[in-house]
Length: 254
Image (cartoon, rainbow, N blue to C red; front, side):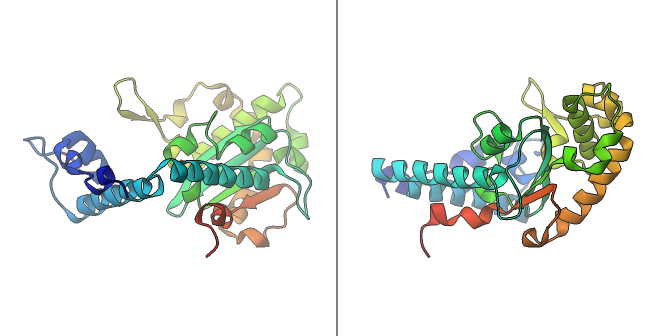
C-alpha cells in the first residue's frame, strides 16, 4: 500500500454534516452535526472500509490496470449471460422488461426495445446510470422477461407499438413494485423527490390501461421468478442471472 493510502484521513466524513447525515440516514442536529448512533457508525465504518479496500486494489499502475481489466471481464461475462444463447434458450433480442435486485430487495425495473445493446451495456454503465451508483458486482440477481414471446402479447391493440407497450409495462411494474432506484428522481439542487406514479403523464403511463391482460401475465411470471432459484427457472420467456457467479473473474482462483 502506498504511503498516501496508509495515511488516508477519513475525518472529512465526520466534518461534512450533509454527507454524514445522508450516509447515516439521520437528520442533523441544530448545530449541523449528525447525532451519533449505531447506524451512523456502521455506515461510516463501511465507507471507510470500502474506500480503503479500493485503495489497496490500485496501489500502483500495474494493480490499477489489472483492476480495470478484471472489472471489464466481469461486465463482459455478465452481459453475455444476459443476452447470449444458452443450452435452453436462444439469444435474447428485441423488447424486454428487466429487473435488478440487491440482497436487500428490488433495486430497479426497466425496459428496452433493444435487449442486445441495453442488457450487454447494463453492467458497464456507459449508457445507463445504474452501474455507476450500484456496481454490478453487488447485484444479487437480474431478471429478464421477453414479453413479446408471451401468448398474452397478442392482446395488445394494433395502435400500440412494441416500444409504447414496453413503456406501459415498465410503468405498471414500477407502480406496482416501487423499486428503490425508480422511486426517486434527483433535483437540480442535488436533493431527491419521490416519483408520482399515480399522476404521471408519461407515454407509458398513458398507455398503461391498455395492456391490462398482458400485464397480469407478466405480473404472474415476475412474482414466480423473483423468488425462485435461478437454476430452477424454466420459462422460455424468462432469463435469470446471478452476477456472483462471475466474481471469480475479479477475485481470481480461490
